[in-house]
Length: 569
Image (cartoon, rainbow, N blue to C red; front, side, top):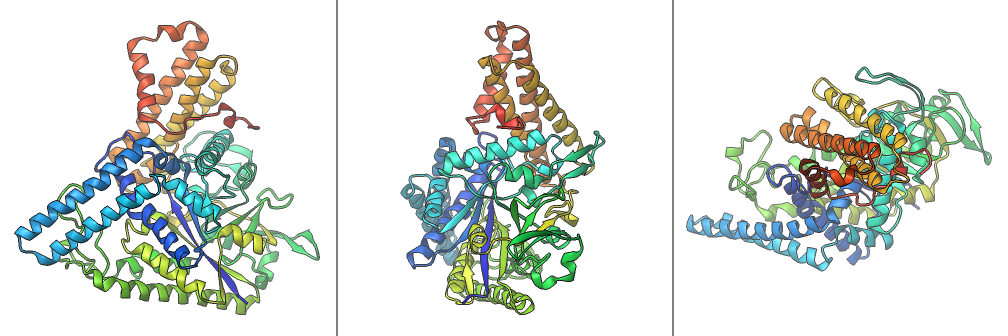
C-alpha cells in the first residue's frame, strides 16, 4: 500500500508573439518552445504510455499559449522553422566537413535527425499540438490546467471585473480548443490576494472589502490551484473536518496539531479568506526541497557538466548548439564539445537521486503524521527541453522509476483531490513565487508607470461597457470586443516581468504600448460611433487603418464576450 503520491506540475506559457516580430524577440520564442519542449513532452508521454505507464503529469497550457498553438499562422510558421533548422544543420555539416571537424560533423548530423523527426511528429499529429495533449487528457494519462486569458497578474488588477473577465476568457479558450473544461488552474506567477482591504501599490485609491481571489476563481467552476510554499506555511487555520462535519477553529489552532497536516506542502488545503463558510477550492503548494534539485543554480541537475550548453551556438542568428556545460563557471570560450554518449548515465543518475528525494520526503511525512503525503513538484514546462535539453528524458526516467515503486502513487492534482479530499480550511497571506515572495518583481520603480496606464485602461473600459449602447448596437459591440482583446493583451504579466529582469526591455515596452495605443483608439471610435450612429460609415483613412491594424496583428481570442466583465456572465 502506498504511503504517498507524486505529481509533476509543468506550467506551459508564453506571451502573445504571433505577428509581433520573429527574431531575436517574437515568434522564435514560440517556435523554440514548441520544438524543444511541447513536442518532446508529447513524445515523452507517448513513450511512457507505450510501455504501459500512465505518467499522470499535470500540465498547464495557458489560454494565450493554446490560442497561438492552435492558429494557422503558427502552424505555417512552425513548419517553416523546422525546415530552416534542418537546412541550418546541413549547412553546418558541410562547413564542419571542410574544416575536418569530425565530431562537430557528427553532432550536425544528429541535429538533422532531431529536427527531421520533430517535423515528422508535427505532421503525424496533424499540426495540432493542443489536440494531441487533449487526447492524452481524455485518455486519463495527464491533466491539463487552464489559467487567465493572458497570464494577467491578478492581485494587482484594479477592478474585480477585470479579474472575472480574464478568468472567463481563459476558460472559454481552454474549452473551445481542448474540447473540455479544465478543473484546475495555474495562478499566474502563483500570485494570490486574499479578500478584504486592498492597498493600491501606485497611489490610486485603496479598496475596502475586495473579494478573495479564491472566490472569483471558484465562481468559474475551478476546484484547485497552485501557490508557493510560503503561502501555505504562513497561513491561518480556519476550519477542520471531524466526526462527519466541519468545525470552526481559531487561527492558531493548526499550529498545535502539526500531525494533522496543517500548513504542510504535503497536503492540499481548502482556502477561504473571508472568515465565513467553507472553502470552495483547494490549493497545492510546491515542495521547495525537491524542486531545488532542479531549479538551483548551484546544485540543480541542469547545470551538470555533460549537458548541452544553452548559451553558446555556432553562428549568430538561430545558431545550433555543439558544446556542453563542461563545468561550473567555465567561460563560453572554454567549453568542450558535447558528447551524447555521456547523457543517458547522467540523466539516469539524476533521476534516481530525484526519486530518492521524493521517497524520502514521503517517508518522513508518513513517519511524522501517519498520513498519506503528496509531493508536488512544479516547474516551468519550458525548462524541460528548451533550457535543459535533456529534461524530457529526466521526466521520463523519474516517471518510469516511481511508477514501479509500490510506496508511491503517480497522480495528477485532480486525482489527488478525488482520492483524498482536503479536510482543512486555511486563509492565506498575499504573495507570489517572485523575489521575496511578494509583488516587487511586478510593481517597482521600473514598471509602476505601466500600472498607472493599465488602471486607466481598466476604468475606461468599464465606463464604456456601462455607458455605451453595445447591447443594441452591433458596430459599437464589435469595436468594444476588439478593445477588450487589447486590454487582455496589455494586462499580461510578461511585460513588467521582462522589464524588471532586464530581458528584452525594449520589446516589452514596445509591446505594452502598442496594445495600449490600439485599445485607446478603439475606445475613442466606439464613443464617436455612440455619439453619431452614422459615424462608422465616415471613418477616415487613418481610422480605418488603425482598426485593421489591430485585426491584422492581434489574431487570437476570436470570440470576445462583453458579458465577461459583468458580475454574472
